[in-house]
Image (tube, rainbow, N blue to C red; front, side, top):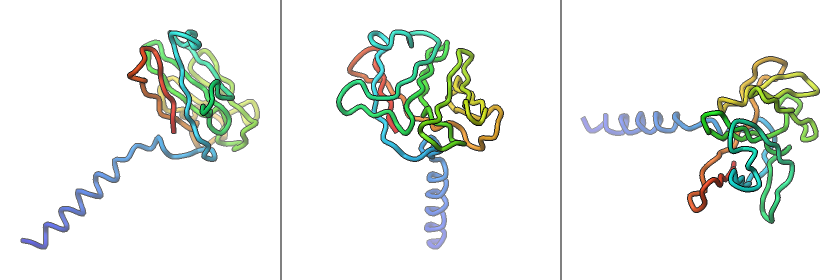
Length: 150
């Protein structure tokens, strides 16, 4: 009976480890992300449905990832953040171009990515990987402020 306890423990441990969120998987080379958006201030164009891109930080210490940030806000109010670099091209100079329909297109390879559901998944084109996703969380100290990190 005592021998089954370690087996049970290992089985439980493996099941917990296998439930790790894949958002941390990198589809472009790693580059630090730490960026704040304020939908009540500088980023009021993200108050409702839409997108905005950032290629450099606005304050000391802010970093925008490998190729820059694409921030997308759904009509329901969810905010998603992606790297602007196309994972197929793997070049920080080749940036996807967001559209108002919740998609983004690579101007070089033609891959189309769906940004409105938080996955950055490939809809069409040669890319085998989705856009690099970043974590978006509320800054609980300030209403309307969100922090994007990796």
